Length: 66
Image (cartoon, rainbow, N blue to C red; front, side, top):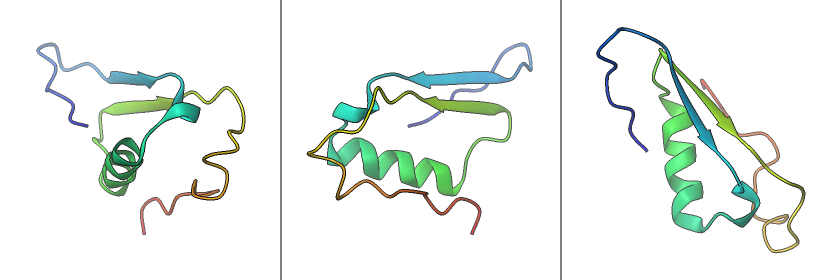
């Protein structure tokens, strides 16, 4: 996941819907991004509810800023 620079110096919104159906590659990319987020971007991950397939592998609270 990469955010391109804004031509107008505005904050950016990255909205991802349906993360309950994410695959392992997306999870790895999201956790990598959360370790070093863009300072002028807001990331919104929308989850519709718990998925039985992901409940055991999805971290309950990712370690952000550690």
